[in-house]
Amino acid sequence: MGPPLLTSVACRAGKGARADRGDIRPYPLPLDGMTVGGRKETLKCTFHPLLARWMYEGSTAMSAQEPASTPPAPPVPLAALLARRDLGLRLLTGPEDAAVHWVHTSEMADPYPYLLGGELLLTAGVQLNDPARYVERVVGAGAAALGFGVAPVYDTVPAELVEACTRLGLPLVEVPPQTPFTAVARALWRLMAQARLQELRRVTEAQQSLATAAARPAPVPAVLGALASRLGGRAVLFAPDGTESA
Image 1: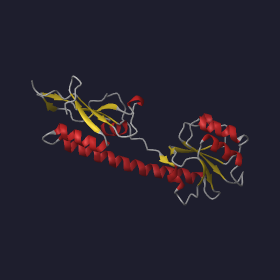
Image 2: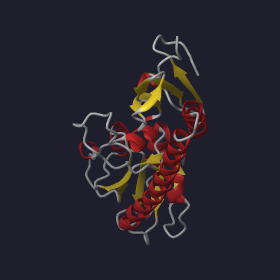
Image 3: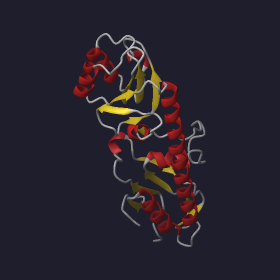
Image 4: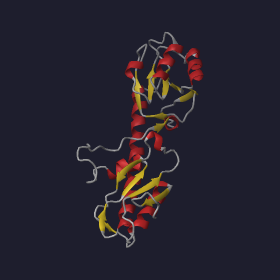
């Protein structure tokens, strides 16, 4: 009998990836036409969706009905905004590693219906009648953090607001009077643009390394090695019967 037909590759992603929540999904590699065991096969891989979606979206093996999309901008840790000295932000309570996806400004007494989750919500407390209830609604909406602008309504951040954020674990940031909310939003978008550019470069380098590996005399072990190196995990080739063959 000849060598087993190449049907699929399973790549175990690095830390943080979980199959039970969809972190590990099958996406085809653009290696159509590879001849293994006398037949042309398509090498397929199961690995982290961030790398998979960005590198292989648009492959001929994927559904033609799936719309093309650009890589989403990665979130920015709150600490990156706090590190901007020109903003003068100060963390009053809560973790500084919260992932911020965007900035939203609201002076509604109940901002819950207008939040999507992951926001740094900025407010001057115009309608802050019940700080405890307000924080409960913000946390319930999934906001990443709360930024409170000092002046013109309040001279200092209300103690009741600090207590409520501390109790519920919501990061609370003091925004000084000289920092407009638009400056905070602009800083976040710039940080997100930088992070996205770095991620695109990383993915492009990974794609180039896979293409180079596929062109080598022994493409299967070369591709497996490149995948394992890029993903920080283990790449395995399975035969049609499910046994590990490489």
